[in-house]
Image 1 (cartoon, chains in turn cyan, green):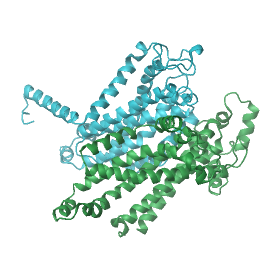
Image 2 (image 1 turned 60 degrees about the vertical axis):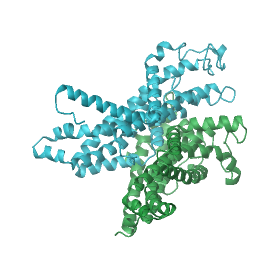
Image 3 (image 1 turned 180 degrees about the vertical axis):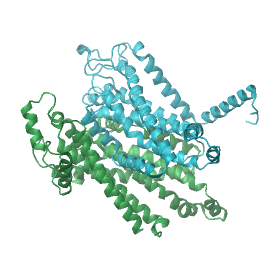
Image 4 (image 1 turned 90 degrees about the vertical axis):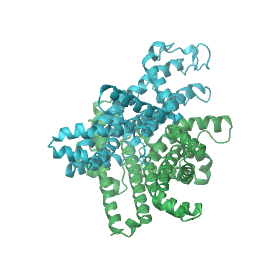
Length: 296
Length: 315
């Protein structure tokens, strides 16, 4: 890092050496690598899944229902004769879309609220944070269930609800980082120079909040997959015949005494992705926020 | 201490009040026409009118809320729309069952989680720690319906040790219900166990780094004394907050787990209520869950205050 003197070449050197350091840090934790591999695998599946899936996700074939895994159907078929492998492949797009949009919504609104609230302080901060506390005082799954009862279960509503529920967690993290940054000298200096609030927020504070947002966002995404799948399982989330993994497990419950594969494959897919994502977000934390072991 | 408690208590009351407004608003305002939501799209105009009459939906909103809220406080929770019987005894019975399951899980995962967390922290970065950390990291993300169904597959269907189905009669006594609660309790415990292990681990590692622990080590205090007198006393304090925060997960976990096993608890009642669009039942179960949840957090606050000298002795 001592090379950083400003010529384009040494800039490049600085960047690549930083990359190397990061990469080495990453390799110290094999779990992170596992996480990255799993998440990327399902991400690729989300893109190409619909094209390489051998069958349609909704095509029923009642003559071949509850068939065990075979050459024709490598994960077997479900109670309506649908190919489980194809459903899981195509379902991975749903997982990324639903949980991903929900996370994006929560991160965007939580970031905005947290930045604003932490930077302004005073009564506005107090009001925003107390209302976040109140939302937080109802267990997320419970609140999601009643809101979906009222709005009606649909993919769009699930995104809205899950996104909305995670705003308090994100904004709380952002706010605490902003409060800490506000007292730092570079922010003080920018104020002294007479920079505008917008400049300080976006050019001085925001870049330093980003690593925290990356870690928090990846964690929220993990929980979002979890929550969306749980809602699907309870029958309150994404509705049939959609190949939502949680919904598949919920539907399979009636059949798994006679046909275990109907349940094990979608359950395994959820477990694999959630665990992979958990590993990945933990690796991100170790990489981007080294030293901060104790934050929740 | 008294002021601390008073402040927390006021906050709890305020939280409950606001949470009740949220629940009321979400269930009764958000749908636009509650009668339509309850009866479905194809309800006749007469049926809708009857229901609006019965629920008093024609009155001003604040009166509807006040009526509902005061009724709730007095234990008049209305009648279930499905079974036409009072909601109160039904919810209370299910609350008892859920509490039994929660208590059983709680007694499993809190001590075990703390123990594993302390071990992982003391063996930091050694093989044992990496195993504990990786496993807990993996398990913490598994939804309860996945772990629950896997447990059923192996322990109930495969080995036949425990019942696969826990849909017992709601008035079963604790000892009779115990065998039916073991698998659900393990299911609920796993997620929370992993969470507490991780948090305890990082708490203990933080304390191990402090100067006073180094001083205690340097002055030649035996390792176990450093651990019990200095490390644990300080590391367990934040763990109380962690345990309290985990209660939110416990509630969510219970709802899903009860559904997996068919255990007759509050969560199952709530899901049933939502499926049958039984409004009074939904509102009452939600409110009681939130109340218990908030009180549990209050309990954690009291415990935290009692154990933390800065609060106990402060004014």
